[in-house]
Image 1 (cartoon, helix red, strand yellow):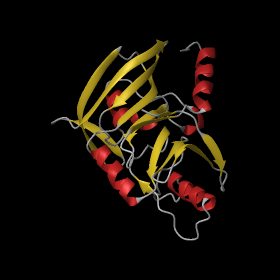
Image 2 (tube, helix red, strand yellow):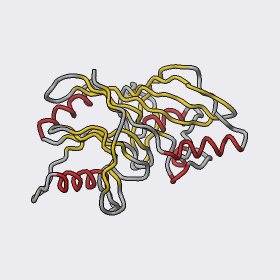
Image 3 (cartoon, one colour):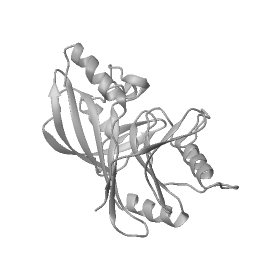
Image 4 (cartoon, one colour):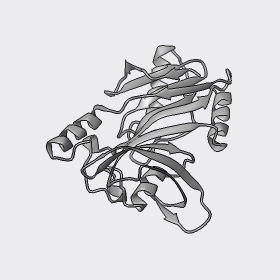
Length: 239
């Protein structure tokens, strides 16, 4: 199974750098920085989707529109691996994989409180406008986790996300008293650098839409994670 963990940066207009992990005729895999939208909303802010299109248009000197298929999403304040489809057939194949839970999504997060050593959580999550909530009913959201480290009120956690509900990791951890650092929407009281949250999509495994082999793409956290840990160390809350 090929594993891709590096990336190169392609300088873009509008002071943006596209961090490319992998590219072929069917896929474009990038590392999303925190704070940038995946696709457009009412703010009109620049999006990762538009930057990716601009990159392909410049690289291949395309005159018309460039196709990019959005097959999954990351929250604006989060960071990590994002896979785009470069053809409609690839998009259809990848969307089916996400719908049928054939992908594997590994996240890392920093949360307040001492998380159990490991476990699996299943809940029913419903979205109400811009927020999501855990409600009574048949479970539709599941994740497993293991605590990698804990010191002085902060846990470093690895999460295997089995489903993909809106704000799922953020909601399931906050509901149990472990809000993601920087996530003021879900009751965190600790700031995180760059107005981000400490949630990073560390790796994503998919089956290539034409080669049919499993591929894993990974990227490292932004420098803000190291800055935060250094500051918490000086404050006596080190990991």
